[in-house]
Image (tube, rainbow, N blue to C red; front, top):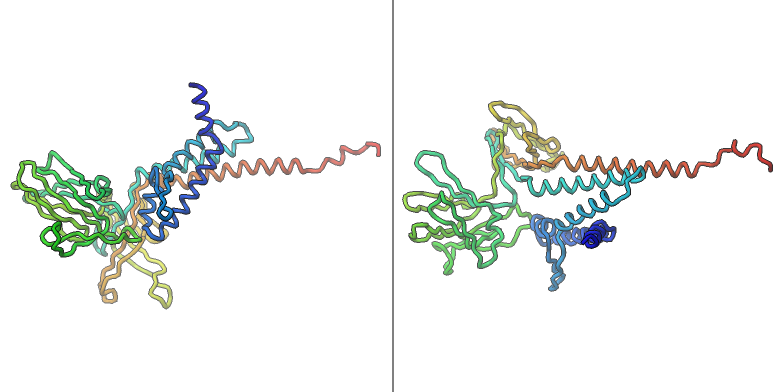
Length: 393
């Protein structure tokens, strides 16, 4: 047993494994980059960089490969075993140890970012206030119930539970708080509703699959859903589409519901009001050189004015708001026309880790190569001439 563990550790710490992993990472980076010519960046990232395994097609031939996610896990194990535990530890390896620790820190930060970060955008009109932001890519189905004049109760089904449905497959969702089960029988990542006389159409309308966009944030998803009442009454079939503008209505017993498909939403711990948006154009062109927003932040009964520009984000309560775009009003030249400003919103607990890891790696490399330089200079120093005085010719 000890020999098996020793061999496994030796393999995990081997230079050959490191070279193999780095070579595969290079290959997948090239293949993923080439794949972007026909697929969106989001799809390429999901298939090649966020998966354990990927099947890349070379013409009609499928080529199974490990995904970048799996390779980075193996690389972290290899660095820990070979670059930290197994390496000789003395003054000559301090720099190497520090460099390896910095790389491991960067990999750890990437794992935290992948598993815990939230990324989306908030688009707000001048004079308006926003307190939530939406994902660029992820979807969710919200089931809202209206009960008199009281607040709306909402049940949210994350897209991870239905967005990967294969043709013919279904996904069912149930809650003790709802008098029905919701069954998703079809999900289309990019589609539009059209009039149809086909048997599967609902009230003369069917969702028609569209070609995937190169920019996934421009896609409009749709789904076919079935409401299955728990009391055995008649089922209700319907279509939900991201741009339909109003929820699909459904009445079960004496309770009224609205079912809506939208991009995933997160609530901010503060609110942002857009007070003013400005853009600076390149001379003689209509192209924006820079743009910025004056905002007011409301949190816990306090207010604060701030300016968000292309190179000066707003950081608050673990969230970072970047100025990423704008929408010009149709009557942009008229007095009082109001602009829309778009902020990219990121919540990443490890957003500073890349900076810290680069500093650690730099310190390790400087320490290692400075020691090498000092040793080289000492070795190349000419002999002291005074030591030869008094010797016979």
